[in-house]
Image 1 (tube, chains in turn brown, blue):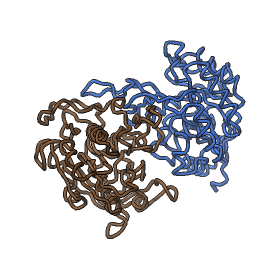
Image 2 (cartoon, chains in turn green, purple):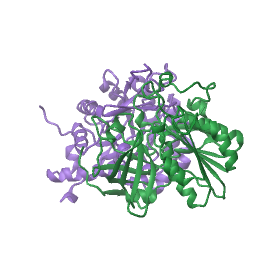
Image 3 (cartoon, chains in turn green, purple):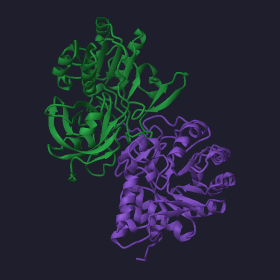
Image 4 (cartoon, chains in turn blue, cyan):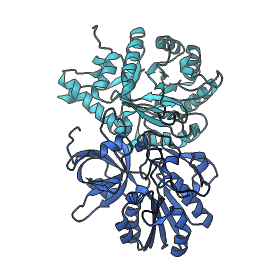
Length: 329
Length: 310
């Protein structure tokens, strides 16, 4: 890779910057990868739900890749670092797995609109799927600092795709784990336990991050129960900066009109009740599911899924990679 | 030493402090990139195309990465003339930006009306209009204007009649003879040309057999198209040396800028590379100054059209 000098920061005194960041930690997290990057300005400015865009190497790769911010450290031994967690599922993220400690990567962030924190003292439920759990751990810390109760539901395809179990237990009043194959926690999907957790928590708001079909299922369940729901979506991104208009999501405004909003600028966090899921092409609940069967997963639309997800969890299921928490239905 | 290099250039009578501009559709409204740096660092801001009515654009997926480039099919999503004039223009004016407003439409009359309103309301901020001819013409089976010399000329004539600032016609390379189209739009009143728009392309998911883009076809941009763009600039400049050209297509480095200038461009627009580096417009101006200084070039305009035979 091209050798970059670390610690070079360009930008204004607030908002996103471009920084060259030394890799401090690189390790596996179950089926995923974690990189911890020295990025002082980004760590100071980032809020839960925001993401960074990282320049990736490899032959002929042009575009940056979006990664949600899984954690920031502002004090202590790792002060001034951010963590990103990702799945190697395309040429860009494959390259990211080749990055080593002390390598320097080119990062822009923090980007996007964060999860809005409750203004009142309400209980919260956080629903994560796959590595969509990552930004929710960051969010949970912020909610706890505000003295709010956090209950979590974390789902994944298999036990090794269940991220951050120990932290989830540490940060939450209760946590329910679900896996498609029953290899960790309850066999099933996050929506199978959502009602029970909402009843127990008496939640005033639900936050969700994971595959889009899971977000739809969670948002529709919350809407039916009258609980506000904020979701961090995934849509293929070009720039992450708000200028290419690739990553739009149809959002119904207060006037009832549906308009395409950029998930990199006006999102990735949206009011889940305002997303027009049908217009977006996100499937709703299928008929009661048979056991998770990767081979039966419908082929996804994208051979280059690593452009797709700032926040999130899984690419659309593919015949060769259908091991994710494929929604919650 | 480098401070002695003059970077200012002139494009169809408009003086630009540097020859580096944004490219339409790659710089949003300007405010998105201003989060990173002062966008008036650019010679001019070419804004995203403006249509008469608000336009929600095409469904997703809208983009696919390709070797050294990308395909996009956005469908001209924009807030529409009224909202642009109410929201984006005042911000650009307050910042003191030099704006090249990109005009789009699906009929000649659409183009004319947008041009008329932008002329009426543009003040000192809009320094030129760019006519995005790569729009489907509803009055001609949805063929893009830019592929037809008479259709292109008709649009440019309508816009030029309304305009009080220079009019640039943005052309596509997806034609048999770009010089013919260039001659037609210049005869119709274009004061300059923007060369080139994206090249029409396609990518297919090898597993599913589906097109990668919801729109099936999309525009190819990025470094992959740069040689095609340089060729078009060179070809048109040789045929019509008096017509100013805004060169555009895959610019990423200072030497790319120099290639476009040498091919005959008076200014150079940066498009897709902004997606990767929001600072690129300011950086290229800085690097161009240094590049010229190292070679004893006192005025960047010396490079315009400066090629030699092989």
